[in-house]
Amino acid sequence: MDNNSKKRIAILGGGPSGLFMYKRLVESGKNDFDVEIFERKAQLGSGMPYSTEGANNEHITNVSGNEVPDIVTPMSEWIHHAPEELLKRFNIDPNKFNDYKVFPRLLFGEYLAAQFDMLCKTASKAGINTQIHFQTIVADIKYDLKSNTVEVETTDGQIKEFDFAIICTGHNWPKSHEGKIPGYYDAPYPPQKLIQRLNHAVAVKGSSLTAIDAVRTMARHNGSFEFDENGGLHFKVLPESSEFKIMMHSRSGMLPAVRFHLEDSHLSNDSLLTKEEIDEHRKNNNGFLSLDFIFEKNFKEIFRERDSKFYEQIRDLSIEEFVDEMMELRERLDPFQLLRAEYVQAEKSIKRQESIYWKEMLGVLSFAMNHPAKYLSAEDMQRLQKVLKPLISIVIAYVPQKSCEELLALHQAGVLDLIPVGDDSSVEPQTEGGILYHFTDESDKKQSVYYKTFIDCIGQPHLQYNDFPFKSLVNQKAISPARLKFKSNEAGHTAFMQNKDTVQKDEAGEYFMNVSGIAINDNFQVIDQYGAFNKNLYIMAVPYIGGLNPDYSGLDFCEAASLQIVQDLLQD
Ligand SMILES: Cc1cc2nc3c(=O)[nH]c(=O)nc-3n(C[C@H](O)[C@H](O)[C@H](O)COP(=O)(O)OP(=O)(O)OC[C@H]3O[C@@H](n4cnc5c(N)ncnc54)[C@H](O)[C@@H]3O)c2cc1C
Image (tube, rainbow, N blue to C red; front, side, top):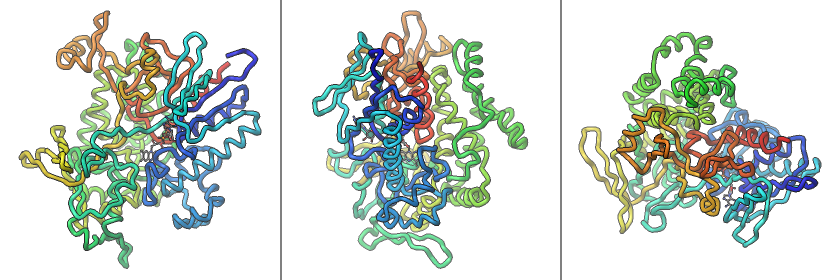
């Protein structure tokens, strides 16, 4: 960058991450930079989940207005200026808009687009030049080591040079069999493809929010929901879909937990470990962050004052014992019975605005743990993934009330059921169409069930280093695969002998476990194959950084990561 000129900043992808990145720049109080935004679509802000790429009218957020991080105007204010057509479409009376309720994702997408517009106006007033390239796809990115600049190449053949670029290209759902095997869907998105009359059983892999999206769409096109005189919801299947049934397949046959009132709407807590405390702990622990330490300080300790009864209950439990205890109840009860009980409990929590505190704190723990997760040992990352993550993903799914009501109505109508499957289950696509679902049933018998329609609903997969879309960066060795060091050489050696594909030994004889995606530092800067971070290139695209940030997603992530990046990027 020449000393007299402004910094040239590129935001690659204009979804929610790009929106928060832009907001941070616009509100930085500085204007010594120009911004260019590259967006594949014709609209900014809505990204994948809040546009027709990820939602139909029936799909809702799992956050309420008060839980959306600040952008420009709150949802409750914007709704009064929302286009008439939108309000009509979603049957919303702005004067009755409830900031504590979830809302349609497509409506939210329009809100995000409007926020982008407002930010552009603010930027212009502040003397920040913004150039937006709509319907422009970034095809490749190169790094010029000599000039420390980033080259952005678009599919229309243009190449532009920037001092800084932030990769915000977001979700990516790779296709394996969809389009080749009739009736096989790699993901339920875009959901329009599930608008089908189905007179047979459908297999859904997974039972979390992605699966619930698929269930809500298919149910609407094969029957209808009706309220009885007491306000109870019922489902009536269409005569021509009399054989329609949805079989969800989930690990241990569990459903995710229901959304409740959050005491702190932004997943934080004053007692969380500070960066300095984490650094101090790492100094005394060979650079590693201990999972037990985080669990102790960012979870258990919080209850000492707040809920001494719960604290006594968990004080002496290890992570493994805590998870066992919390899962035990879920395993024991019928999942739909538990869903009903949790629904009642969550309704009370929302009505009284009282949190279900341990669940809220588990969400806080999960969020707070992500940023420093790159300092976990390989052993602790395995424990996190195998032990704690299954509980966290069930508890922090925050299934909205409306979705629960529909799941219960479908189950009651005999249209929705859950099949517990274990790690040995597999899905075998059939060339003539459909799949065979192989699993071991509850009486230990091997089963292979044919389904004409199959939808993979496990959610956004963590993508691998080899999936990284901007190949010049790979070829230049400007990025590197994410990996974590084993704390114990002995454990590393054992893992290495078992699986040389995922465990590596370096020249110094130390062992590393490959985790998914690419390596980044604390400022979300990419790390090259020689271990140096790139001062000019940042990444917020969650699918490619999932190995070191195991549970990052959502608007809270967009808010937190963009702050970290802008503080680094705009420092003098
Ligand atoms: C179905 C679904 C529902 C969700 N619901 C919620 C919710 O209710 N609450 C919540 O907090 N979180 C939710 N999330 C989490 C969600 O991940 C984030 O809220 C958010 O979408 C992440 O934004 P993003 O900009 O990183 O990615 P995306 O939303 O994927 O946006 C990426 C943008 O980049 C553009 N782009 C991609 N590639 C290129 C390219 N090569 N060139 C140019 N442009 C490109 C895309 O067109 C898109 O606009 C949901 C996620 C999913 C998948």
